[in-house]
Length: 557
Ligand SMILES: O=P(O)(O)OC[C@H]1O[C@H](O)[C@H](O)[C@@H](O)[C@@H]1O
Image 1 (cartoon, rainbow, N blue to C red):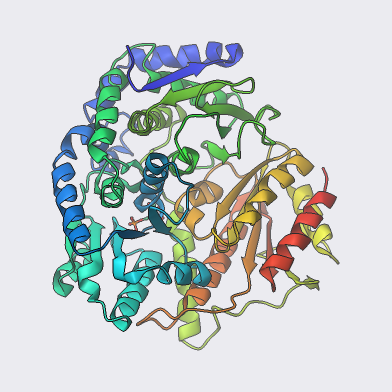
Image 2: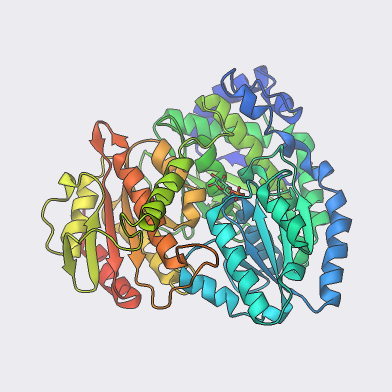
């Protein structure tokens, strides 16, 4: 029977280890209980949160009314000549629609068409989104909580620029939020074009098939009914207490690998036809499991030939999204709707096996608070959130800084020295996280630093765009296994952009987010020592990339 989602454990040792866990899940009737919305599966401490977070198991049914409602909204907008969709939203409020639209259009993730995803505070990237044809633009403002600073800032600047161009801003705003948020109130007060309240019983990272995933997708013309059909086709099999339930098999594989010390999941697309699926799965896995010093670190790589995949060491498991290739230990195939639901079930079940609550994100708030503190101290005159400590040393266009206790850094004279010190500071079987607070479209080449660092060091290496990753893998970096070292990259801002009604600009906010998270990371404990955070600021982005790429070639381990 073709269910829309299939999982195969290719590696025999892993399959043997997973068997006992498969039996355990089947014996506990965990799959059927999950599909029935049983909130007791993660123990009494998790139950209060879980009881508010399980509506995603039946979204393929409960989201159906959105199909007609959104088709009507799209027609209405088209009748007004509005067909360019910009989405302001972070983490769970934008990752799924980006994958859905890129997959259905066959375009690149983060490309200009047909969905412009704005999940950044980088002034240049925001300015580029504003420079599109505003006469044809609708802004979808998506925030479950209604209080996310990036999303609020993007809404403010779009409202101002619409008006400055003679366009009635309210008529171009579509808001997606939970019932009872202040964003919802604002949408009502200002008479925004449409307010769509999402199902509050679904957390952000499980919300692909709620209004958060479906509204922007439908407005760009994606057939969301077909997407729900795909999930519906997979659902019955995911509910079965059977050893061939793909969610049970995937959960058991992830937990068995984790128990054997392979806590990193290296995800490579091997021709799934899904565009950028790993970027969505990354948030689901990292934020759901990375807490209490444990969890699974997703490492999204460029493809099956990328360093860290087929040549990984014992600390990682290679997972193909798409048909098994020669490097895969586990392969996951299926339709887009089927894979959304499969991974959600599997991660929730893996959470039960690993012993964590898959529905909270206890360490995300700390970085947001640190950013707010920096911005408030700047406003109160006791500091400048945009300014920074003096660099330890400057090498060409790159200023070298660290966060917290940087005894691991020694006395670097060059970027190569500093990078080598960071690599040396990583424990065996640790990982390097590259975190680039830049424009992920215009500065896209920075992502090549990931495979280069992985190749040079043999360490698993992740890459995230700031502040986007703070809402995705940021939870794991702070709450998961404490074996990471962190390379933070910030860049000069040629043309900063004001945020209407705020005392800080986009550039200041972006910088405060970087500094805030670096401080929180460096304060966390790694076997008793502070965690290494190297901060490189590029006074010139293009020249900085060249220098940095050269420096990476010179490090080793
Ligand atoms: O949708 P929002 O409330 O704006 O939240 C966006 C994101 O914010 C936080 O960082 C959470 O950790 C994420 O899970 C969430 O997806």
